[in-house]
Image (cartoon, rainbow, N blue to C red):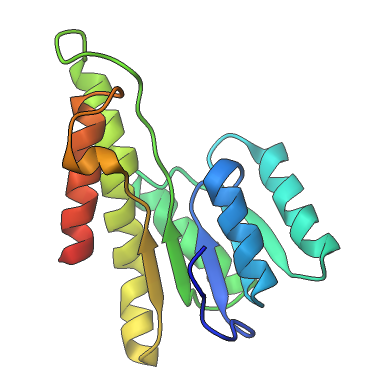
Length: 173
């Protein structure tokens, strides 16, 4: 992982879909760097609880918070909960991702929309929710996790490629 801020003490980090895989590793790394971490999950409550336990066992502070980050009302409630329990979000890691393997001729509109909602819309919603506070404090970090699929065809499918290309456009914007 690239070098983090030399000191994330007294900083609050939120990792979307932080209950497993890359999100879990990021949450644990942020805690090791001194951040208090909010671990977002949608369905995997027990896995999120294990991440929180791992962070706390290492001397850190963390909470888990349930939200479907592709739904605006869920994001608002999640940010309100994180801020009431931990403080304002200083570091946002947009890690939520989805994508089923399929060809364009078998891809449904429902799956296309779901993939864009999870991979792209969620980053927009979460960023929009925390950015005003970061600007007001004149400090904040937003990390959007993309994929090489944003720049070329891959096995997952065109819906995944489009969502990750959109995420990179959002990041540059």
